[in-house]
Length: 321
Image (cartoon, rainbow, N blue to C red):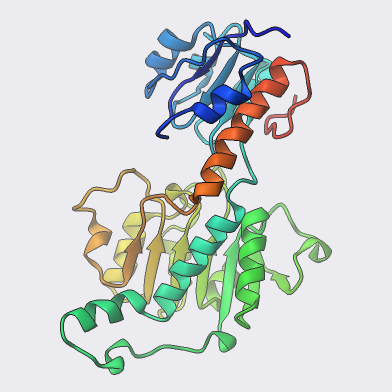
């Protein structure tokens, strides 16, 4: 077994990389753990890499043109918006993600955010702690069985979310440009246009990837289609929702509330304009996390690198060539 391959962790915010070291022990003697955040840092420190595991490091065409020996880039996570997929394919570099490690966690988190909004849990908690024990302060609250949820992106996570909200008795609409055949929709899910989804939904939950088609997808015009009694939940990527437009909607009371696990720029500043609204909830990009999912993520990213360097077919390649 050749354990002389050069594999690097370009950046990672985990407490250790012990799992990765164990998985890759038979293909690389060492596994350097770097902290590359800029293009120049990746170029300077990763030029000899045959395998690269990344989290936030930018893998642009310029960067990859300097990675002459690289065969595989594996990203911790589902999103691959930090990798120029076309350039990677043209350069013969496999780009992979880990699409299935946090499906239940993210959909659970989206459900929890939705319930916190629709049942007004956070507001009720704040009132009670201020000495105001009065359910009327939270009115109106509507029964879930008479409400409609619209899910944008009905892949693994969106489908899991649909399954969970159906248990509440909600009507489920979905928009996904890659799924147009109603027979391919999950059970109990009705495919509709984005405009119909936004107009008819009492809750809109975002579960699509960030790409050129979805960047700024929910701008002021589209958010303006939503009911003033509706809620927005986003556990996907921050740049899908236009935060300036969302702030305007909340300021003008044209939305009942919103909950985001992701922001356009992270970490969120304490003076972020959205943070002043009591009907706005935010968590620190943690929807994916559980003790189990964190370990699965690390193992699967490392296993993908190991497969490619051993001459085996990748399981999670996202840039077919």
